Length: 172
Image (cartoon, helix red, strand yellow):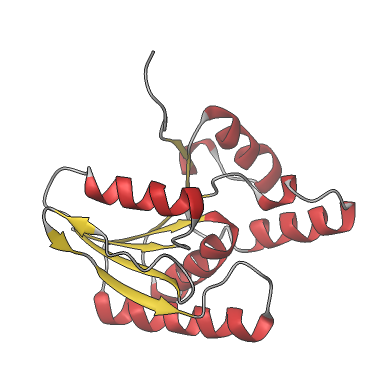
């Protein structure tokens, strides 16, 4: 099985993707697509360096760069032919879900906190929510907790069948 991760290797997301790959068991091949300005330390799986693609993916909204990142993602998916795309956070999620839809590749999206929750401006919240809804397409949401899963169903419109939850925590 081959999994393509799409997201920025910065901050907590960098740690999440690295740990998910480094500590995963089984015979899974990983590929990572991330931004050019992201963490440049290599990621390892079963002692082998994971193939990485540095792209135009960035956090800020920039129509030209975002279209370039989408085009790059589609090319990477067509070249690598992953069994599944696992995209992370708002921007990686948007790019990954559209690339998965265009290429017919099953897609998991982990929001890591929806971006519409972060803005104090109602107009921005509405725009972010509409982007989430429009790019939901055929993807599954893999939430990091029950509250994120519930929010994805209520606010974005994921069905119970397509809203999965991975309890990303330590058992007490």
